[in-house]
Structures are given as structure tokens and as C-alpha cells.
Image 1 (tube, helix red, strand yellow):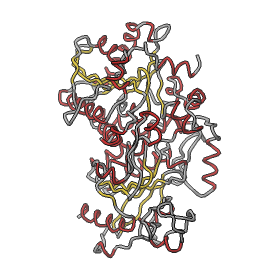
Image 2 (spheres, chains in turn orange, green):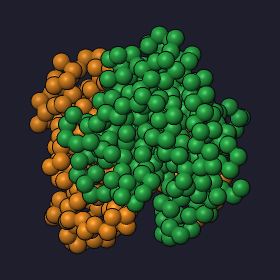
Image 3 (cartoon, rainbow over the protein chains, first blue to last red):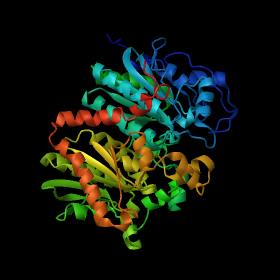
Length: 278
Length: 274
């Protein structure tokens, strides 16, 4: 496929128009009153303090993909309540309610172009059981990575996840191995893999695909780590310094390549794609 | 036996630990130390010894028996350096064609600030990914606690088996209770939901075999438990030793790629493929 030559400063900061989403009335960063019509063209970054609002897959997809190029795959792969989980609520019910709300599992994946470059895109959806890595999520990720590896198409991931999905038991844990094996295929095939870490990325997702990108990019202020701060405090009685496990902390500790505002993410990804596919 | 009684057996302070098994499996075992980057993690022991006439790399979580030892071994909870040491020894095994035996017995990776600062998430992620590239046979056994990502970081293998009274779980019962009820004292109920016993795990197709323990559990008779583990480990290892490396890696990939296929085998119960 021909790659459209386009200088990166001309790459729009959104691929298409973002949907309107429900936002808190005040910015959690600075407390200023939130105006959706003002924030939407700014990729839901507070124009006053730079706070990055959490986005679902329905926003991430038009933000990254060139308008009209998104082709979703394996949308009808479904979760099942294999452990017959009932606490605090029946897992099957939780899943059905979220599906009825229009969410479709914790990971959605498909193909699109970004500034003309064909890519595979996968995005977590924190709204679906905390973006937890489930069997369906693992299956969608692994299939996409396998296809990207064999076709030589760059892979872009946007993560926001609490870790492996407890309600699917040890089989959710096994998704870490399933997905990492597929990441290994991307690396072995010489296919670029860019990982965008957003707030929050924890547990099994941080301990699998999210930190294995050729290039890891974190959003400002995103919380990223393995064990959550509450558990660390409970287990070790440690006082955690301010900014512990922030994106900036991970940059200082060598885990991510850069901390970058969402408003320049797309031009950056376009440039990285150019640098890695010529 | 109730689920919670099994959890207690799996965590019992008298239960044989990795070193108790390794000393019986390979009496000439030599422990090796260090990740060659910055430190040695005593929560994970590793080394070489003769097993069924063949030099073998052994890896295992070690919890420590006395309080002093427990502190030194950090209750078998690994830091990032442990996963880096494991990979270093795995590469040693691959260089010389030694098979690898990995014994899993950990509550989880260490949930501390230092582990976070030194990249525990990336260390586990890298370990899980790299195990798929190690070109020698690997057999893993859960001998006590298989706690979450910290256990899986040592659990990518060609075959995985479990001792009868061991557990393998996505989250500890305490952590699950704390997530569900914000109350980690409801661990008994959480353990029942998690389906973490060996019988439940093999039912999900996650392990190849459950190894029966001697009467009164492994704690009652270390020698008999070691003999049973040894027999099962070697029975799984033997066919792998003859397998060409490319085939071995493809099978290892497929083992985890389709590990959830049992649940899709039942109509209407599993991921639907289009």
C-alpha cells in the first residue's frame, strides 16, 4: 500500500471527529468548570491545566484512526461466566449490562490507517470491568498481533486497565502468556510495536503487553505500575512519595520513552511510523 | 476438604519448599547467584545439578523456614532482579542444551515500592515473553502457591503440573476479597469463587497433570512427595528431550495460545470464532 507523504506537523491531532462523552462537571485537575464543546476538539485535555480525561475505546479509535478507515475485527467474540462468579454481583449480569450500554469488552481491535500508514490498532476500554484483561481481550489482541506479524503491519496499542480479570480466574492470568507470546511474534517479525499507556495501567496489563512496546509512550499524569498504591501501603506500611507510579516516575525509572500530551500523540505516531517503515 | 483447608495446606509452613525437592532430585545441586546486572534475589533460587543422568537447570521460589530465613528469602516474593536472574540461567541452559525444571511456590511478586522503582512489571512482562524463545525443554510444577503474575513469570513451560494440595490463582484470596468487598478478611468466600485448587485448575485445562501427595499431604512425608514429583516431572520431560527445538517452541506457543480452548469446546460456552 502506498504511503502518503505528509510532514508530521500537518498530521491532524485527531483522525476523525470525537464523540461527545460524559464528563464530570469540574476538572479533577484544576476544578474549573468543564465545557464539553471546548474540550472535545482538544482531545479531552483540560485547556486550563492539561488534565487528561480518561477516554473509552469509542473515543480512542477516531482519535488515532484516519477518518473512515477503521475496520473493527472479531466484535462478536463474547465473555462467558466460566467460574459462575456471583460476588458482589453475578459476572454474567455485569457483562450483559455493559454490552447493553454499548461497550464491547475491555479491548477492541481492528485495522485502519494513521496519516496514511496502515496499522493494527488495539485499545483498552476502562469502562468495561476496569479494562481488565479477559479471555476475549486476550483473544482479540493475540489474533491481531499474529496477523500484524505475518502481514508486516505496525501495531499500535492504547492501554487503560486494572490488570487481569479476577472473575475469569486463572484463565485470565494465562492471557498474559498468550498475549506476550504474540508480542514475541511481532518482535521476531521486525514489525514496529508502539504502546501508549494511559491512566491507569496496572497489574497484569503492565506486566504483559503494555510495557513491551518497541517504544512506550505515556500520557502526562497517568498512573502506571504493577501493584496498586493501596496494596503497597497495606503490605509494607510504606509512605509513598507524591508522584509515585506516575508517568513521569516511569520515565525517570527507564520504563517509558516519553511522556507526551494527547494533543501531539497522533503527529508523533505518524512520525514514528515514518521512521520505522521506510 | 474445604477449599480454604487446601489453601492452608498449600501455604503450610511445614510444606516442602523448592530446595527440599531439588536436594532430593539432584543431590549434587550447585546454587548459582546473581542477575549480572545489579543484585541477587534470594526469593528465587537457581542452579545446576544432575537429574536422571543429565545436567539440568533448576529454578524455584524459596520461602524460608525460620523467621530469619523468611526475611532473607522475602517469603518467596521475587523482586525484578529475580526474573532477570531466571532469564540469565535460562540462557545458560539454552547455551549448553540443559533442560529446565521450574518449581513455583510464591504468594506473588513483591508488592513494595522498591520493586516498582526497579521495574517489576516490565521484568515480569519480559520474562513471560522471553520464556517462549528459550530453545530447551522446560517443565514447571506448582508445588505450593501459584500466586498471580509473580508465579506466571516463572510458569511459561512446555508442560505445567501441580501438586495435589497446591493452588494457582489470578489473585490471592485476600486480594480478591479486598477488591470485591474492600475487606480482606472475607478470604474464605473469595477462595471458593476463584477456583484455585488443583482439581479446578486441571478442569480448566491449564495444567497437564495433578500429582497426588502422600497421605497427610506433602508435609507429612518429604521423601514420598519428592519421589512422586520426580516421577511426574521426568515423565513429562522425557518426550520433550527428543523434540527438535523449532517444534518445541511452536508447541509451547500453541500451549498458551489455545490454553482457553477447553471452554470453547462446549457449545455456547466460550469465545465464538467468526
